[in-house]
Amino acid sequence: MDWIKRNPLFVVGAVIAVALLGVAGWYSFSRWSRNAAAREELNKAYEELKRLQSLPIASGSAKVDNIRLAREQQQRLQTVLAAATQYFQPPAPVPDSPNPSDGEFAAALRRTVDQLTREANSASVLLPADFKFSFSQQFRQLSFAPGSVPALAAQLGEVRAICNVLIRAKVNSLDMLQRVRVSPDDLQGPVTDYLQAHPQTNDLGVLTPYQIVFRAFSAELAQVISGFANAPHGFIVHTLQVEPASALPVEPTETPTAPPVTYVTPTPVPVVPRYPSPLAAEQAEARERAALRPDLYGRAGVPPGRYPQPPAYTPPVVTAPAAPGAPAARPGPQIVLDERPLQVTMLVEVVKLHPQK
Image (cartoon, rainbow, N blue to C red):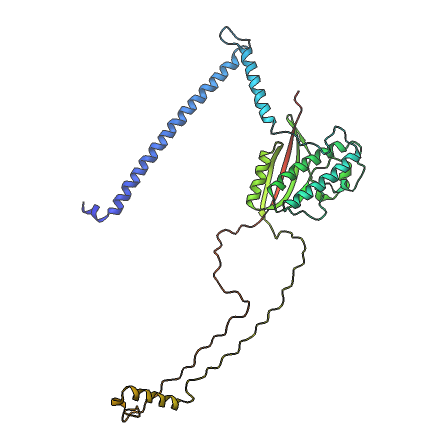
């Protein structure tokens, strides 16, 4: 008992440690029992699957109608596919016609570039100078390679859908947009407009990649990802690279030059003493004392055998006033969060499903 009284903290810590070990052992044993039960259920499911696979294929029996069950499962599968298909609607081509001509596509391209530029300016999204949304080569043409207009129209519709997501998120700036080459005319365009990749085709559809580089804060980046996720089109964010952005590009503007500030040193105000000399001050003080206590100081105000010493003269301190127009110094607010802009490089794939047979 004496040892326990001398070491109460050690005893309490040991009791708590033993209790925690007991709780950890009970938790581990309960989870182990749960894993064992789940493993047993999984083995039973495998055994049932093997049994069903070994049975001969038949229409069923008096108790089980396999044909009806297959039709119900097929109907359920069609319902699931119909619900998923609404999120993979292909963007409408621009112009939206089965076989557009060269003139129709050229006019639609100019209208789309102008519309996207105006929407970006309205949303305060900065664009590079003479930005044509990866269609710089086609923007200068009026006729295009034979058979390339439908593919270009489909790409223009997809680019418009991607830019709408960025503009609605109000990113700070859209620096680059790259697409894959689908026309012989693209071989003559600027390299910065194209992505060194090719569309991929599988059993479900066609995946067309696009790479975008933009600058935004974390809130706008979240809006972009949410916009791609909630869009009715099949957008898949394949890769995402985020790094701190440098200074954002700004439009050149004339900065007004502030007039020079001239500080005038104030002239110190001369201090005029009350008395012209220390002797006059001493005499005035003696007269005041004689008037107050004539019995002690006499008429002259000075006791016998003592010469009064005047107090030391201390000139007043004159402080120069603050310069005109200078703001008063005050403690600024404490900065808690100083978020910096981010430069985002995103690879987005547009999924276009094959027509259902």
